Length: 270
Image 1 (cartoon, rainbow, N blue to C red):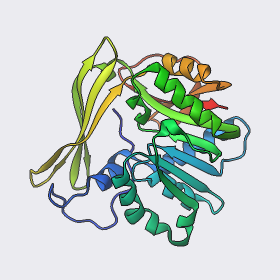
Image 2: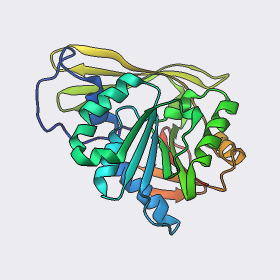
Image 3: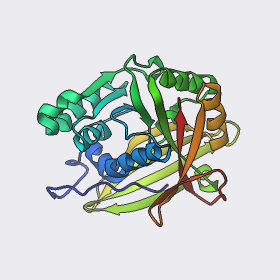
């Protein structure tokens, strides 16, 4: 799986399994708010809509995107939902404080995304395949319906997904970062129900490691399955945006040749 590289740490220290913070490592190796915000703005611009101001990040974790979204423009607000109170406390201490007074424009809520939220927003995102925690179609459609109810006029739900033959095989990919290696492991895959076990490990120059720092039990939803589920949830239009990471391009497609591994984004319009 291709990794979105974040900005390097400002204060370089020697990392070991004993001293490293797995949340910081995840942000550095997996997330890139800058490219995500650019993608969101491009999706809205392609429809002739103004750049969105209000964002909801489902499965927000450390709320890195929420914080960077608010920092990107003075009129922007962000709402983050997650069921893990521990990681939300971490976000408040480690990320929201950097916003100082602007932290008032970020709201973090401990909540199951299936419950939804009454606040209406311009765009909701569920990224890094987080919604793959839903293994049953009924649950997935229920989630999509809840999101649609909370979108404003011309609002959009943006999901990303990965596919291709490599998504169904056991493999281990290593990406080198400053002071550590990011290791993506795809474990056992059940071909009957597309259930996959995946792991993130971090390994350090001193030989120590954080094995299974993050563990995922996912259903690998295909792109056609997702489009059908979004349609059943009431979304009026679903655009497919393909990522060409080799040439740093994002483009809208209606057909696309399969490759061993690919990443795409779905923009579902209310």
